[in-house]
Length: 524
Image: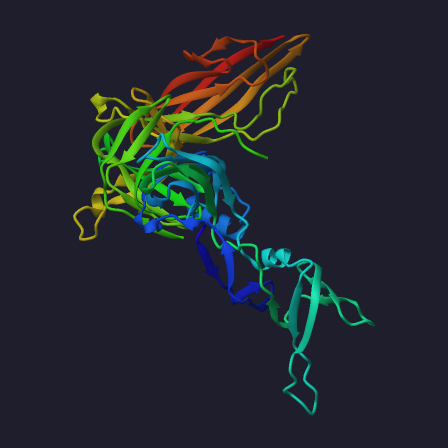
């Protein structure tokens, strides 16, 4: 026989009113509980589907709290080991404290004690959690008692509430529709507001649940204690890599550290869990709190199929509604880098569609700023040589004038941030810090002609250097008007970077100016 569970509910908040829901104890023919979650062992693999450039952990937590339907960009695979007692034959097992964001189609149950003689006959996921509206849904067509406040009379300020016993026919967020024994007023519609002081519900024989619960019908040939492994996917859990790149005073090398920011809004907590983070673009088909920083831990990286997995070296507790950080890998010091100035003066001028862009003055605003790019080689020779997951990079520069103070980290100032994509071992990593203050550019069209199916343009680009040393600037021109083009004239050597971009390396002397010209011909 299944075990009996007794529950009662006394107070719930409904809209703007406080309702007292008075229920007698009722017996629920329910499955028996598995071991408490405190006795479980967890391992979690986290996947992120977020754009690291726009993904703000605190912002998505706030959005999730304001809008319960908001979907956090990521998911996790949870594996939980519990010890339970099964009787020989058929068992009904209730497995609670699972994530509210669970995908029930991914649930797996396995007895590690007797895997060949223990089988799941039936599986249910009960997520219809108790709430005022859920309770009222269960009472449609049943009798309820409502106590309504009475307006005080001038001579009597202690009037007792009006009591209505009726059958609940339907309800909305604003109204209750009742069938009463009053022959003159058999149907009443009363507002669902602060006038309702108390709402009493009679004995309910169907069960109510207060947390997402998995229920299995299990056939066990071997009775006794079993270690069981349950796994499932859950939404509303994700992670992001956060890097700190600190440049030395000479701006020749840098120190790199990386922390993983974990966000858990799944509806469940995972105490002392083994956590693995997967970096890579994993295809997954889609259907239509407080910040904590952990002590540095050992994280082991390895290849996983076509992706990379990072395993945190010691168990870590990940509470529900929390943001937590763990060190992803030990800091890497003295990594050489190069600084590059890049000028892309065409701004956002769009790109051709099904036909060439032939207008003389296309839409868009031309750019005068010169970007500052840091380049690091991700290899052993440079002190790296590890797969770097996509994430946000914050850059700090040391100010020698501030060094030697008592404040920790004195002399390091924030100078910019950027996002890197998944960067495999051996790849060059480019990081944009911002725009140069003392280097600027100008770009203007000096000639244009359109004859039949041929269009020709000539551009003049001026670079100004107000720094105390000469600089090298890479001029990048995007040939956006049509796919078939050729450079017919150029004052400097250029290189074709891809099907629509050329790069022109330029040296600009101290306090000087450099002029570059080129002509491009499009044909179709």
